[in-house]
Image (cartoon, each protein chain N blue to C red):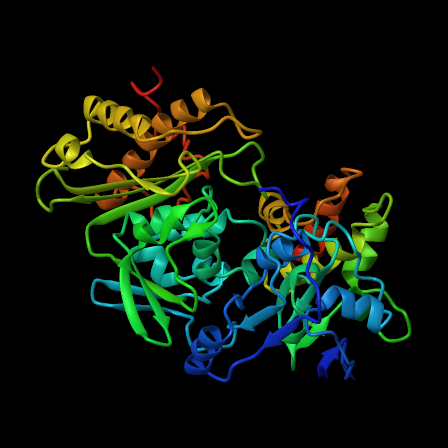
Length: 153
Length: 321
């Protein structure tokens, strides 16, 4: 079937398997590999993307169900010309990445928390990011980065 | 379930997208084995692991069976209402905080944005969060098929772990809870981790206080998750609680009855003995929170901790033996 979606502002019309997930379409059909292939059970959050203003785990979302949607992946957060977003910049300055595998999902989830106006409160942010696992367990710097951006933006 | 022996999906998967509810139920009638999919957060895992082998899915996510609507003392919630919508509902914050609190601890924000009430009910996991808070509001389930509509008590939907009384071709379209003034409710649970975990024990309660009586209870409900093969209403509470105030002795008796209503198993989330004990502790806590809410002495903006333990407002007493 033909899927019509807007991803990071650009229109896409891939021909997809009706049972394909958003994660499969993003990575295998469109080459957008910033969204990570993690647990495939919705536990780790490495495949977090924003669909029409809400974060979802792309591994459990049938692509056919997001026909017509507006999707933002980690590739869409940087400005044109590869300038980093304030959140990406804060992650770099706080050293909020160790192996880096959780980082795209972490940044996308945090981006939506900030867009939704989350208070720059450590506990609220930890709760908001509880669906994103960092197995290097470097949560403190991640939370610091998000607190900073939530209080500034 | 022996997933290793289950056949993997074969053939070309199909996803049917009916235009409306009528077309959806006709399709379900004509295609035995077709599985409805809304959020997909359970179904896609079951399918990948071979627990469900159908190649035919029916997308119901866009049908007009979502939303929260209060009509007098009837609170209707559509089957495809997302858990996140329940969690953030201003209506539920007032009329049924137990539902909101159960939604708040289910999975992550990402999962709650996708997962639906109907999916949580029909997947029928013994530890599912949403059945207990609906059961304490005497909820009914509305079911449609190509031969018409029927309504059952929600408790009758659950027949075993992962099993419901839905017949082939039937679709759950929503639930109706019975709410009202003067009812306090809450949902609390015990977990091993504080987030992204299934309940080891889940307890929902509702209490109605008779107005102008200094705390005389006129109705009470307690429902349990994760300690029986199906979500369970504690039977026989009325004779212990109704017509009395919830003092330490009454709470003790109620907690003991709740413990006797639980037949938990031992697994990674706790031993049977520990879980049965926790049922009593959480039941007493939940009843005290409900009473405070019914009497308007629980601060409206004060969240109930997920395990109900609020050392400033409530101290466990008499329920630990």
